[in-house]
Image 1 (tube, one colour):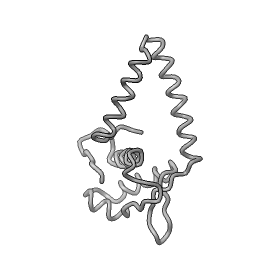
Image 2 (spheres, one colour):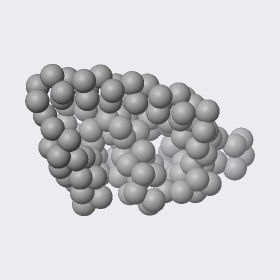
Image 3 (cartoon, one colour):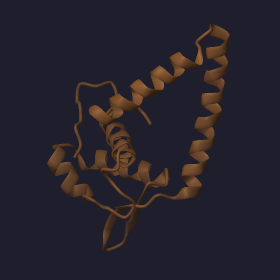
Image 4 (cartoon, rainbow, N blue to C red):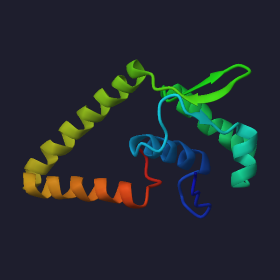
Length: 130
């Protein structure tokens, strides 16, 4: 499920967060799917429970996971929280596109980069922040 790189500069908990987002984007994890318990995932990945807990807390804060007492933790996409993140990302994209115009990067190059990133995320996944 997760492919963590302990030699990466990206902390393990952030890798879990980003890989969870990527699995949702790829349709591997769906809204309503049950996630492994913190204890089970830490045993599977051979990492500290607090690392997994930190990742799960971030995913809850981002509106991606929900813990139901006595039942477990589930993918539960909170549209309001996700919309806020989406708006921030759109603002960043706008700023990036302005820089592209300034540096003479045309739409075809932008499209090529977008298609490559889509292909890369579908082929092998990524630990880069989403």
